[in-house]
Image (cartoon, rainbow, N blue to C red; front, side):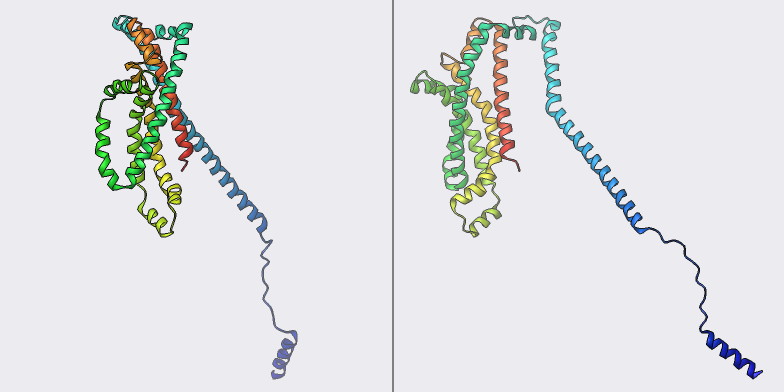
Length: 310
């Protein structure tokens, strides 16, 4: 019996260790294909988001275009319709308020078109000269008052008092001093545009960030560098906002000066039409003046968007 057990151990030793059978796990998954599939899914998701963002951007652009063009056009149609039919429905005499069709018919007259063109050029010239003169003086004065508290405390009360004077009272003085030429009209337009530029420029200069100003001083920046790199960019939005208002005021000043004394201009044409009781002609001239004001204002608006791009 012992010999048999010994023999069995010897046979087991010669056969070596017995290894347990491991089941076959089967084919391994293709990781390359899975990675590619995941990347494709991510790309599709990103493309969908991009298309969604593009659609939202397009929707926002269309909405802004509707607000900028569609709503004003709709309001114009409503006003034009009311102007055309409401006077007749209310029984208002055409001499008092002519319908829109009769006013627009005035532009079919070659004589009136010539008068509007020639006198409009005169008024436009006076407006632009007054706008440039008044704006330049207002910006310079605004810079001086904004930078120096002493200058501001000394001169600002008198500038406010000057602004409080009715400009219709100054126009005869300008005529006495400078005659009946273009100069009085330009000066009236300049006095109306001076104060908005003064206040806006002074406000822009005074609103410069103190930390930035201290940084420029710590870096030993020159006066020119401080002006070109800090003060002017900081004050530019306020200056252009004042310039936008000044364009309309300059046109009003030119017309006001022509009312007082002039031989040419849309203001003179208005007085002539009033004398002749040409109500439709008066409205036609007013439409031209309104169009001039809108065009000048929009030019300044686009200029501000171009310069103040930040």
